[in-house]
Image 1 (cartoon, rainbow, N blue to C red):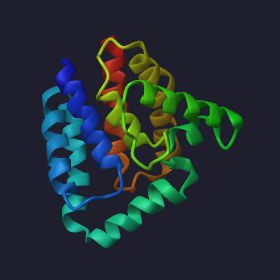
Image 2: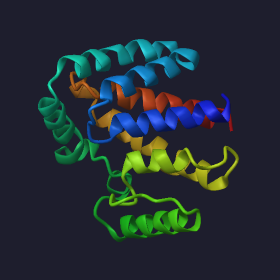
Image 3: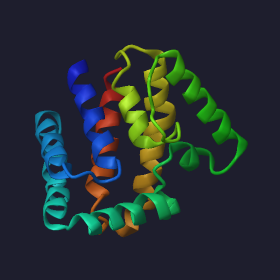
Image 4: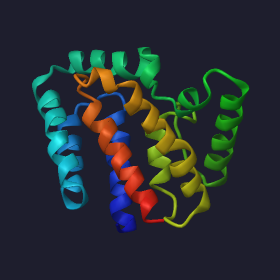
Length: 178
């Protein structure tokens, strides 16, 4: 997979896993188009997410997003929380991320350093061969998405499941090419 395509995947998952914005339908279509090139089975599964986004009023989208990623401890959208819980290790992890962001002139905005969409955005700015990119993929994002997917096995009716599954498949694909 080419570096430009990897970066496009990272942008897609950053958009889809962030709080819903008015252009979510368009973002979902872009992600599906990218998935078709490398992961046609995942593109097909993402069709259900597209149907959900197209048929759900924005207020309801926001409710479901909040219920999935902000309230449900099985799927918090903060990587450090999933990896370490509320421990000093999460604080150290966030401090390391903040240091890397600062060293690389990356603006994370007002979000916490371990916000998964921020991590995808940051990953998209890194060179394919950057050792910190490897660390983010292998030690952070793959374990986070494995836990999110495992925690939601029994709740496959959640409309975000195709996004979580696709993100894990893409990350594992990237890891397999390293």
